Image (cartoon, rainbow, N blue to C red; front, side, top):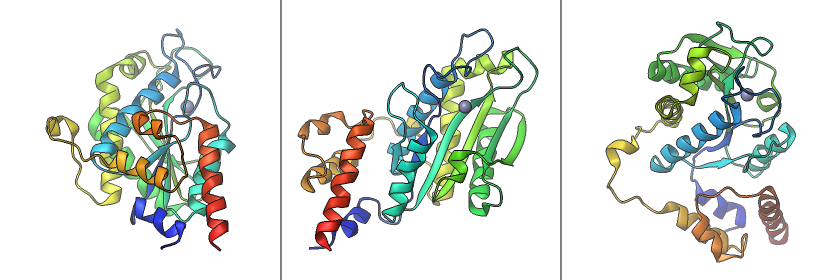
Amino acid sequence: MPSLSDQMSDFAPNKRIWVLDRGHGVDTPGKRSPDGSLREWEFNHDVRKRLAAYLDINQIPYIFTVTDEKDMSLRERTNIENKLAEMGYQTCFLSIHANAFGSGEWNDARGIETYSYPKARESKSMSKIFLNYLIKETGLLDRGAKEADFHVLRETKGNAVLTENGFMTNREEAELLKSDEFREKVARAHARAICKIEGIGFTDKKQDEGKPMMDWKTEAIQWLLDQKIITDPKWLEKKDEDVPMWAVAIMLRRVMEGMKNEQ
Ligand SMILES: [Zn+2]
């Protein structure tokens, strides 16, 4: 019988787990367009959902940090990534945002920029890959792959990239940020970048509609049940639903306790 940690690595052999963060809650103050018609939360949340659909099709493992409409402290978000890293997983923390400039008025700042932590070489090269695909896909102004001392870039143990996908404070870009078409492009660009980083060919869901999908999600949840990390089989019907923080905490505790008992 292999140890629990060995079995966990079977879940995603040699694969990086993408920790998808969408920053800000629905009520986070300030994070909206000058006319109040767009909240940053709405855009980030929707793009992450669309990205997750692409990752499902391309069979790339990911988890979400924030799971509902509420805000969550930066510390709690990076703790999730830290736990995975401590368990021996390779990780990349990806935080998706819309940008803002000035003090709440419309202005001309525009374009897309991506961020990594200063001198984090591998994250920087990932950041450039995201930027390239985002510019190619959306045609917006290239503001560069920048470096910044942000909490989510600094306090993550694995790689970390933050993307700013257009300005809510620019009238034209705010309209784009509201549109389905643009959100889909942004999500697809992120997915293409991730496939590039993982060295696999990108599969676009549009071309693949109708093909039966391998149900790796059910398999993954069944494994959690078999290991008694979760106990309620109802989770099998909630494959795509957000998991509340308390449930993540309970699962992690069961894993840690299981590892301790095997020593
Ligand atoms: Zn933001």
